[in-house]
Amino acid sequence: MFLPFLAAAQGRGLNDRITNDLSRLPAMDAVVDSFMTRWSLRGVSLSVMRNDSLLYARGYGRADASKPMTPGTLLRMASVSKLITAVGIMKLQERGKLVLDTPVFGPFGILDGYDQYITDDNYYLITVEHLLRHQAGFTQKGGDPMFSTPAMMRAIGTSKAPTQEQLTRYLLRRPLAYLPGTDQEYSNFGYLLLSMIIEKITGESYEAWTKREVLEPAGCTDFHIGGNFYEDRFPGETRYFMHKEAKPINSFDGRGQVERCYGGNDIHGLSGAGAWIGSTPELARFVASIDGISAVPDQINPFTVYQMTARLSDEIFSLGWVDCTVDGEWTRTGSFSGTSALVKTFPDGETWVLISNTSTWMGSRFSRETGALCKNLRARFSDQLPERDLFAD
Image 1 (spheres, rainbow, N blue to C red):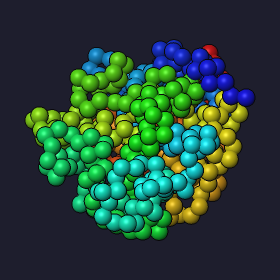
Image 2 (spheres, one colour):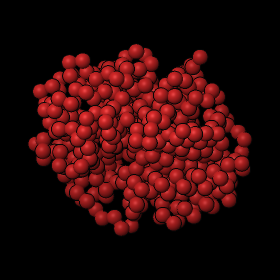
Image 3 (tube, rainbow, N blue to C red):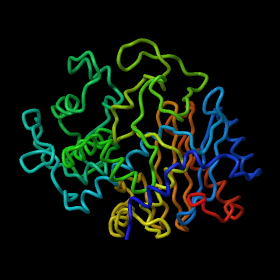
Image 4 (cartoon, rainbow, N blue to C red):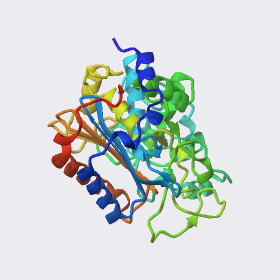
């Protein structure tokens, strides 16, 4: 029987308790340092878990000019946030609050009150599962609306970043790019709608409910919806850095020229699509609560674990995870300016979590490089990792 209060108690203080002094493998650390030099990364956090035991957790480089990166440093995780949102939706399904084929819009839909804005009747075919699998019919042609705030402000006629409701009302006037369920195109807006669904069903803010019902039961007590500007940083959060070729841009809210990672986009407005920050040990702990391994009791049932990780075809996204192979390798990536995040779980129960605090010229393609790094480290050093559990120390 899973006891949420016990898991939360075990995880409390994790970010303060686990320090760089507890993990040192010189040969592996040298490979990470070399990778950082090659890509001009200021800081990296790495955690390795096997069968729900945290074997290794170390920060490399700098979290700020005067602070080293530590395992407990908080970092933006970008679209890794979608995994957290998906678990929230699946827990609502387990509690009988929705089913995956529940309509999103229309008289029997969860998000009512939008009918007057819908011009394409195919919106009424969108289900919760379509949103989870990026199959709702939304397109990023012409720009991702979640990263086009100035254009949305002009279109809506507002001097401030649009609210979720304003953005939704505007975007629902657009025709869908394809019939829901017949194709897929990655959609941040779809996961914003999932965040709104959680709010509508629970009657609480997405952040408050998700912290209490999804993160704290996993032992994650230091996750937050992140801010947009440097002055919005949380205690213990890293500074984010751009690559040296990056130029200042206009801020999303019109306040002037900014570094792209600090005001180039409305990160806070992404909500469950990409706004969470946390540490790599706590993110590993979250994965331990949804991976089907019993050492850390799962907060979702075995069938839900299967639903989330089953590979239906090469053309269909998994639920929350970005890719799950037939042999049991699960991947979730995330990136935007100043951040690249990777969670990779392998069939033998080993999970590698890596987040950096620096943009590279490759942008989102950099996820492939971090994935290759983790596979290299795993092949060379997995059998040298200490047999212990830093979660329990």
